[in-house]
Image 1 (cartoon, rainbow, N blue to C red):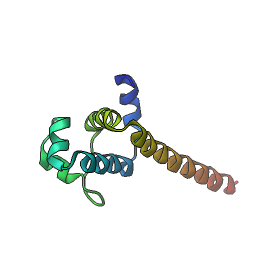
Image 2 (cartoon, rainbow, N blue to C red):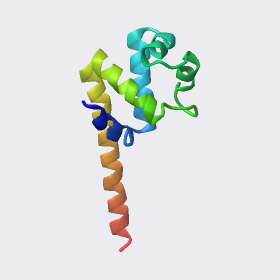
Image 3 (cartoon, helix red, strand yellow):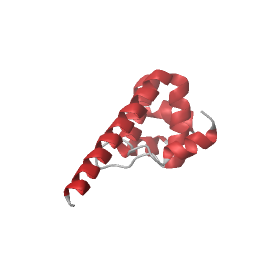
Image 4 (cartoon, rainbow, N blue to C red):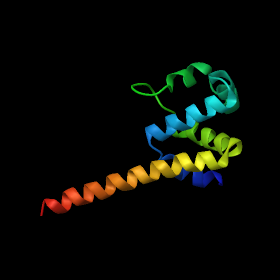
Length: 103
């Protein structure tokens, strides 16, 4: 995936999927510190990406996360992104149905 594709993709990846990618990498690499080193940020920043009611990776950090995740396990990364896409798709269909019901 070239950089411009990651730039575009980053805009559409949900907070939930970003957290899943971080968890996947933390588990695969063995620690928050290892993940932080690999994507060149502080361990403190990674700790903030723990899940509910906490921060999540910015688009800039997501691009680094995606690059690393694709190198570590392409199939799992694509699976997480496809699940996110399906969730968006379902939400859009529900919204369209609700809007059509307002006619």
